Length: 131
View (tube, rainbow, N blue to C red):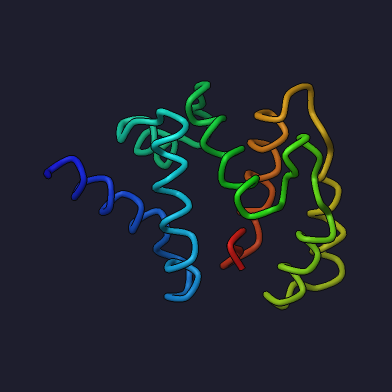
């Protein structure tokens, strides 16, 4: 019971900058991806404190979220149309969209692609892959 509460608390704090609607959409996805990736509470806390901290579980977690929100396809490709659509709804400028699109580059593994893309997407205030 304590572990469940801590996990929910952690997910809530990670979503703190998002709107209520965004949190409601992304929360269940994140919790499911925690389960699927094997990411631990320590992993999630450490990556929040030190974004350079990564391990295979966190990479799988990032990939899971981006797949479940259709930003990355099942085959590991980035769907730039989905990203542009979300950024447009969030009011991103053309310049910001162009800057972020430079990050939409497939890396050597789908997990590495997801990590690099999520790092870049976090530069857009209030961006939520679940929008």
